[in-house]
Length: 415
Image (cartoon, rainbow, N blue to C red; front, side, top):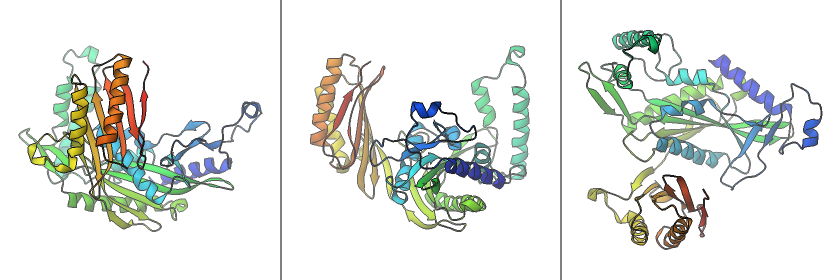
């Protein structure tokens, strides 16, 4: 695995150094000129949508996809995928400012290595970060995999008793009595932070997000599915251990021995929650094989409006006021829901979805104007707010403002 990492780093650095300081797309005349077939063009996006966003590094006219892009399926929901990414960028900007650094999707950890690290440790996969199964369970798992492989080798056209999706799900549940060996780590996201130098672009930092499971499902010998909660304390300890192991493996590559590596530990929200999880820890390794300067984060996400009376609080009354004013104006709306992120006890961002059955442009326009008016009156000042009006046809309108802004921006989509 370390050889692959060294190779990936060498390729990355070679690409970045071949053409230095190219920050704009070539003109058509330049493109028509004969070029060296081994030359790699490195450039960045010229436009920066806002100061909160990184400009992207582009190689040979293409955005480079990272290995973690193909393994997002390991996260339990779309809400977790969004929260995992958004929180990692927030952590990154605290160390690597957007005005000084450019971003590229992770190119150091390849897909094969990523898959190996996310799997369980075993005789055939010593690099696995998740704990090995007990020997007898591992044997059962191996037999199951061989059985499934045999079934998959049969052409469905030749087998009238094809395995149904329900049957396949039942087969995947056969692993039994693994209560003591949860899958802790479900995903690793890598971002490369680049700096522009006189000779081109250089790797200035690495940001890693470790998505840790909050629950673990297993099946007992009687076929009963159990859900085991993984405590925050255990998850934090495991997360720190995984972070140090991964940093140590990266540091084995000479080019990475002095590159700052930031690591965030993300607690995944359970499957039955409509909101995503949060980052509970982040730390940095400036050099050496361990992460230091760990910071505990006080964050939580909550779905609005609050349905259960026991969870009602004056803290969320702003959303009730917003909700009531919108519904009273347009009583035939299908629903209003929100996701609020709180950091250190204060509202940091609010995302709202309003489901409409209106399709006429005049109706959508009137609704959007009313949303803007009500937002100005009822929603907290200074925080990032995004409100989408959606229907069966897709997104109909948008109202929002970035953090710190006082005026809302809106847009109605023509369909």
